[in-house]
Image (cartoon, rainbow, N blue to C red; front, side):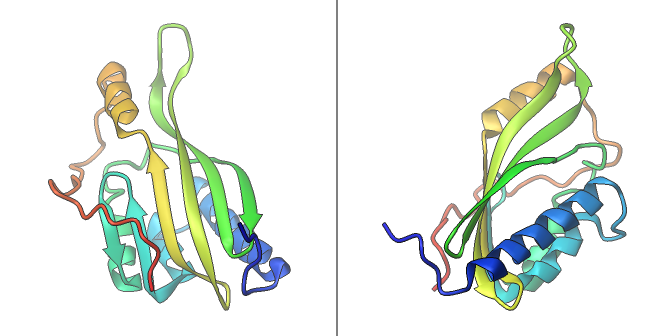
Length: 166
């Protein structure tokens, strides 16, 4: 297994830092486009694969999806726990937090991971988000959480192709 990439490690680390910094700004409500702001970090032909929504191809489609998929979820949080870099691959470990607490005081949280592929010039050509949708649905039911506005639902039959582009 090769951990080498085609880009200098400092460049990949810097792109990962900028990605996490932007996510933190989104968490703090400092980005008017919210998650849509992330689209600027992807190449024009990027691919994004989400566990619920499936495969989205192209920067414009990703930008639309990032905004469309988050409607009604404005009170959810997605803090980053850590980042790992191996060659051109970046893994971001994050937590999804649904508002509310259980009777024991613990929160409704789910574990998530994103794999990003660095493509150069500060941009990523691929992101795959992995999380346990069964746990999300169980936590939603137990928490009684309701969206602040009508939310958009994932397609009934999303494209499950997680392969890297090219």
